[in-house]
Image (cartoon, rainbow, N blue to C red):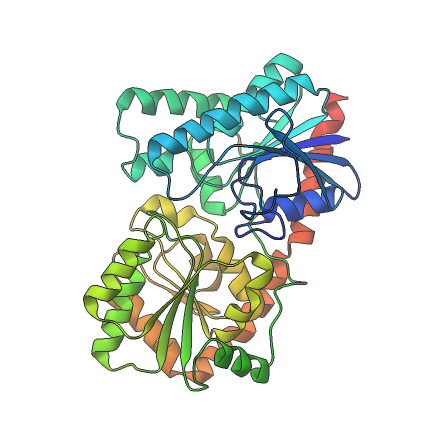
Length: 411
């Protein structure tokens, strides 16, 4: 079978981002032909110095995956108009490529944005190729609830396309049970929606010894007695990293000197977050530039607590944060300021979760983990056990089995 994987943000091993699509496609390519159509968004800056773009497309082979990279830019620092332009470019050029290079046997379209689903729908209508639609973020619900999309006609238009994409998909893949519930509430048959969480690579993300942890702390400039609370990932509008600065402010006022807050990442809110830390005169917050996935282990190993934050929008409780599983796999207790399915999975077992708008509760949770070494050890042990259930090799095979099942009747 020839599977075409549509993902605007495909991240190679050298890239800095969620590489779920790479790891899934790598496993599928062991049994089938897999072509990925993507953009330059999550490739390192100098990645293409020794490659040539022919008619705007660079043809790569990565671990037996045929990767077609369109020369379309996408950055977290882009404004909304620039992002929409990027979405439209990818959708139109992607559909053109599919029609010019058919036949394909099956399309796997991963959002966001919703326009990726539009490509799969149009290709189905024109070439009868079945597709699965993967919901990474609930579009258009998330940008609407966050107030990013306000025009009522645009909302209706997006909801119309959402219904069409869902209705014509052979199956809908979500990354969380919360997303699954939301989609079923829209009238989609329950037997058409499948939950395949983000997961992690447990071969790569593994626990380290106490000696290794102390060495990595030292290499990052921390003392052995410091308790490092790490936030790793995008610093954007939805991520609510400003809440971590508020927590650091409370810790400094409270005299909780042993905790050090590390922010490893960047995005369109990084300057705002840094300015807030400077305003408070914080000496317990440390900023590091984002690193490729393959270089992140020293930071995770230096940490004692994994932090996840989101803005205070209920819709974001359905998210399936990628860092959540990576934290668990290396044995980090998780502390987060949101509730939902991930909280239900590990709250008071391998971490602590607070409501989005309860900063003092969030701080109390972090303080509890910081001061209680026995609790940290207990959570760390249980985190590793939970992570084993979410290994991406297992998840990718589970998803491939679904694709093979739904492709058979169309032969």
